[in-house]
Length: 443
Image 1 (cartoon, rainbow, N blue to C red):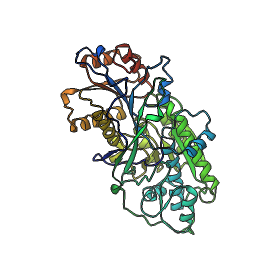
Image 2 (cartoon, rainbow, N blue to C red):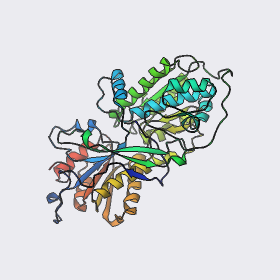
Image 3 (cartoon, rainbow, N blue to C red):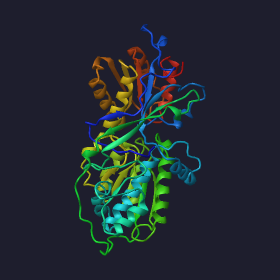
Image 4 (cartoon, rainbow, N blue to C red):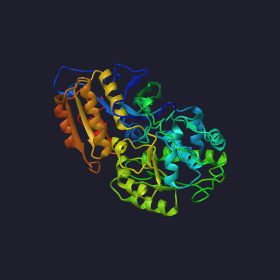
């Protein structure tokens, strides 16, 4: 989801609460001195992999998610942008990562225009610099005019200033603090925003752009590919991401395209880590001659295909990868992302939990780079704010499992004040079992 400030930084990120509530909602604020967890209310938190209305749609019981709160990379999308997204997909329910997908598409198009090339190895040199320094512009049309005038641009998109670091990721980010209501839908009126990161960490490196009179290198028409979830545990994120790319392509072509020609886009399915769909999709995109691939959404999926993509000299730019592994990954200067790393989300979530008075925590974490990475960073940030290791219980689970009662039982036995569920589509089953054992959001 997005608008205003979406960026990312290093682990030493500062978080500013714009409007934090220190009190938990009525469903999650009660407590009891009893050691019986069925008699005390346990706060339940989620993260970007499950904090969406797609999760609520899996629950028929009223109040099944009431009061569950959590974080996701989020900036306040303008009504006009959301309306425009609805024109390309009227069925959109959530807008998670739509802005990030839009900005990713615009960035690679601007970099290609600057590089005078459709080759990933050429345009990759200009992506970071397109987000920093230069003259500010907020849409493809105005940025394109500056480039054609021989000027450097600093693109500030629908997700904010971006301001990429040397690692090719935003140096500052906005996160939403979300909460489900009694109707199992996110209560927009209770959404708050926090800022994380430091824009001073943005890259200052500059690259001399070729003159606009230089001949175009590679295919004269720029080809874009997508590697986004149509199936699998993150399929609920697919619609807003595809919509963001589609809208960006429309805007790019309406402004004159790249190299004076309309850009084309080939959409493919990323699946999830339980399949090899992504590898097959990447093969097809490389064969099609794309210069850049928007995706994948899953960090685990990206780690499976990043070497194949960058090894082929193609740019990969993800709108949703958050694993901190990518910050230092040897990507040949061809991997970028418009979503912030989990080092920033962990700090935002830890701050929220501490503000809510949490002192003893249980963490149920998906066994993949996203789940275990975010959990590790969350534990570090909680510890830095006084929650000792002895008061944190974590359980890693297999997302392909059909039953999570053993992990849920371990949470109940640990008797925490709060439980964090870091997962994807399987989170619905986990939360249902938390409710069944009396430690979920439902009371």
